[in-house]
Image (cartoon, rainbow, N blue to C red; front, side, top):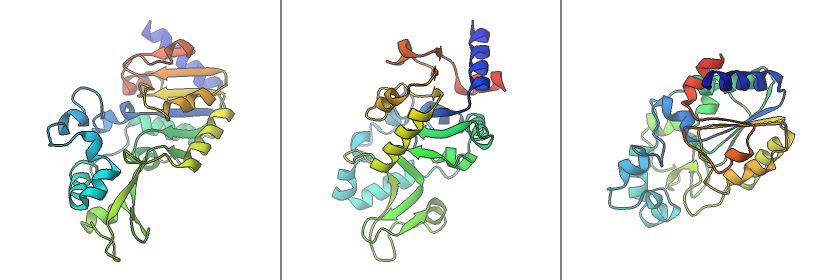
Length: 241
């Protein structure tokens, strides 16, 4: 049965000219980045830290205690030793071939960009970029790590360019994602349960021919999909390449 699903996926990709990938945390697990919500993920890891994970990742935490927020993100989020895995590389390769319109991702790890994707809509921002909350000067992750930077030259707090709890998604990023989905002939969802809105709701803008979901667990959109594969991301990609 699984072999038949793999072949169906390979056939869909072969026939598609305008693929859009919609990715979640499951794509980055093979890079050593824990899924925030799965058992054994980051939520479990930090749930006993005295605050909820949602608070630690919130704009309220940043405003209430900038020093604590800085300490938290430097300990938990910098991901200096993480690299793209074969799933990221496969997705980037299809964009390089001109067969993909790009990626829409819920991930903040920046690994799609690191893998070579240039058309990436990072719905929740990226840990590759940081900025000062006062003067808005921008910094790359490497500067933050190499200089152990916490504050800008102006004295303002330097924060990661991610969407914290309590903040809205970037409107231009959302519009770009919607435009991709409306142009796509194939949508491939990878490593997300499609339960976090408004991100998951964006998939409703797709009206192309093939809707594929590859995720370990079921999703609310499985009944609408052309093909559903409940398997490990890297195993699936290994099987079709």
